[in-house]
Image (cartoon, rainbow, N blue to C red; front, side, top):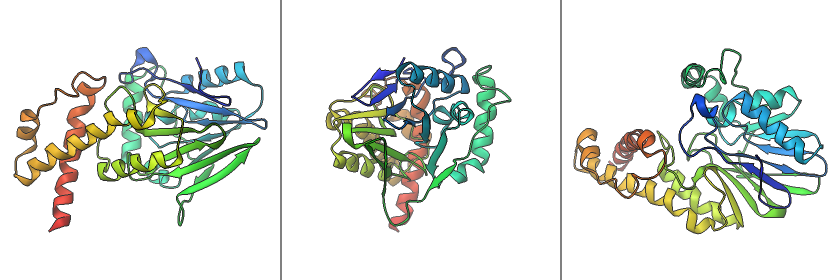
Length: 293
């Protein structure tokens, strides 16, 4: 069900845990903006059937055409619904860095895994779609556009959570779609992301002065500065403990075992994500250590 956020903005809030066949892959957020001339969609959820469900929900609110889908980044839980939107003629926009994901072994492996873990919602007919318009942010960090009297800003935050991160600011309503740079109520998926860039991007997020932030996972935030704390504290703690281990030449297994995770262990997705997040951060801190030499 679409949740109303502001006069023009709605979003869908995914489950707090991980993607599974029982939830059809519904573990992330997506949203849309209704203008007089058309609908702008932000992300498409984690399976074609969820993308189709989004379209059905949008149609209950407005009959204006669904014209554009903005991809926050090319991770499975945000893109496998694109097929449903492509089938009705919507144009897909994404960061030009997303091209690399489409050609990667990671994309092939993830789709193969989801065809098993999310069957029958993701199957042999599911495809990873390229953008119709690849966005080039060279020389600038913001691409503005207007539709139906609503002013939008596409914000380049690539290199934080993924190589192709985009945020969407809806100026008229002061609502920011933050993608996976921002999580509420759960542990973020960090993987091999550059947390140094990510933390900087979180600070920049508030520069547009959003009244409401819609995260990639979790409930909307009406107090963005306060609600950033979990993500910032978690990333900062990972860098602190894994950085200290690297400096002391402590192996990852030993460092992970002796770290006190009690502050974060009760949050959803901790059990599934924390070890991988920690390992990715350990490798990152090794790389940063070499840069200093």
